[in-house]
Structures are given as C-alpha cells and as structure tokens.
Image (cartoon, rainbow, N blue to C red):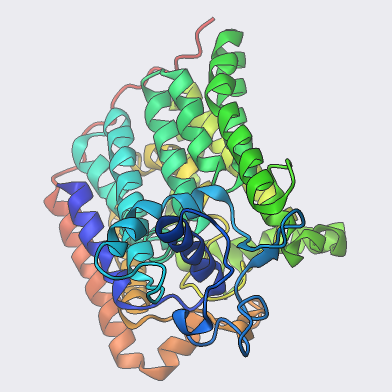
Length: 443
C-alpha cells in the first residue's frame, strides 16, 4: 500500500508538462524506440514535438539534447541508456492508443514511468528501513525521503537520469541488507545506466564490505553483477553514437568541457553551493537534515558495514558530480537534483540518526519535513521550476520569488504541511527503543 500511495501522489506530475529539454530528450528517445524500433530521429516533424524545443524546422537546433552518428549520419538523442529504455514500455502501450510514430510526442507516459520507478525505489527503501528501525520510524523516515525531498519533485515527477539512479541505489541497499552481493551488483548496475559514475557507489559497497569482512569474494560478486551494465552502456554508445565508449552519450554534450573550465577554489565553492546556496542548496530545501547532523557520529558507530560503505560511496559520487557538472544542475526543476543519489545512498545512515532523536528534536524534524513537503507540493501542483535566469543560485532563490508572489498562500501551505507531519508522526506511536544492530564487521 505504501508504494501505491507514493505512486498516486507522484502521478500528479503528469498534469504538468516538463519544461526542460533534458526530460523531453529522454522521452523523445523512448518514444522513437517504442514506435519505430530504431533510435533515429530522421523523419520526426517539429509539429510532433512541444513547441519551443526546436528552431524553425530543425529539431537539432533547439534545446533538445541530440547528436549525429558519424557512421551513418542519423540524428539521435544524446542521453544515457537507462533513462531512455526505462520509458520504452510506457510509450509502446501509448502507441496502441494512437500516440505512434505518426502521432505527437506526449510527456504523460514518461511522467508516469518516473512516478512508477520512484515509487518502486521508495518501496525498496521502506524494506531497508524496516530492517534498521522500529516500524513507525521506518515508515515515517521513508515517507519523509519520498515526499519531503526533491525525490518527489524531480525523480518522481519527470523522467530524469536520477529516476533510474535512485531506483538502482535503493535496490542495491535492499540487496546489501540481505547480503545478496551479486544482486547488489545487478541492481547497482541499473543505477549506472542512468549515470555511469554511480559506479563509485557500487564499488564503494563492494570494496568497503569486502575489506571490512576480509572477504574478497564479496567485491568479486558485486563486480560480476555490475560489469555487464557497463558493457550495455558501451553497446548503446556504439549503436547510437558510433563509439564503444560507455560515456559517449554524455561526451556529445557541451558539458564535457566543464571540468577543465574550473579552478580548484571554484570547485570548492561549487561543493559549498550544493549544500547551502539559496537557489539549490540541499540544506535550504531539506533543513530537517540539520537536526540529524549531531546524531550522525552515534549512528555511524551503530551502522552495519554496508550502510557505512553506501554512505561513503554516496559522498564520493557527489564529489564526482560537482567536478563534472555545474553544481546548480541547470534549470527546469523544483528543488535540487545533482545530490539526489547521494541523499538516497545516505538514507539508511540518516535513518539511524533519526531514531536517536529526543522528543523535542523529533518534533522539530517532523515540522521541518512537513514544511518541506508543503513547499514541494506547491511546485508540483503548479508546475513551478527554476528558469534559465536562475543560473546564479548564490544570488537568486526561486523559493523566495514564489513566496513574494503570494506570501499568505505560501505560508499557509507550509504551516499545514508542518502541522500535518507532526500529527502524522506522533500518530505512528511513541518512539520505540532503538533496535540493537550488529555492525557485521566480521573477520
């Protein structure tokens, strides 16, 4: 029931069309594969696409991410394989009802796919949480992650690479909690088809647990499960872009030059901006994390080895993300997006910190989480998102701008969210004793 409820909530996103070429590009690729069996965009009329994602009659001259295959001259979508392939079934079904190759591209199948995959990720994380915390705390913690963070407004709202990434990480966490190491690699491999550098997280779990337990076989099992997905990315690159490199889909974009354009002091400022900038700062949009920070050391000491390894991998991934991409993540979304996979990877550790909160701190965390959910609700329902003018997140806040447009309504929704979260949290019952968790750092 939890997953169904989350899916229905996330499906609200299908009411509003995406306003970013990143999402439309992935949906275009899935639509072409589902309706024609090939990824080539030749023959696609601009009249079949949303109005402002092309210029004149050339779909390659607008805001869509496309590239030319040098081997055959075909234009293709320049996106990672996971985010395109994930929506192919939905677009195939839609094709039965008239949205075929001669129809018009719709965002609804893509949005519903995102809702389904993100809800599946939340369901897997609930299963993880139930092994680490009392039932009430597990449900509350997972609900906060699902509806009080941009897991809802980004990964569950539109078809981003993060949608595939968080599903794979959630699956890997679920498998790690059950010590199914080959399955950790397989489900982690799903994540890296969305973003290849999520291999950092998969490797951290495999190597971290193998070192902690002095069992190299664990790392080998994780590698055996995940490496076929790297091969899949290579095959995708060869088919679509004429290159065996598994990173080709990203290399075709203009972001490939970003790392060389930044000095190390600028990169340090980018990392700080990821956390605290008014526009996209994690702690600005998710302030309940501040309540958990003092309890992280105790949570770390009590955490199983796979929880610690997963969190280390998540932090390592964020460092790579900030190195490879502008920390603001572009535009066309509500909240932040680049740190989402890190947030999910750190969720088991954060949950162990949450169950150690005292009553007052717990009430404050619930109130902040409810306020966060209210803010996200505003963005999802009204289709709000950062625009291209928001490229300076240190000086511009879309939250502040939205507040100024209607302060009374904004405050009312936020207060209702805070009150509702506190009531719901206490309705789950008094805080049960923290379960004894074996760290499992076995020799």
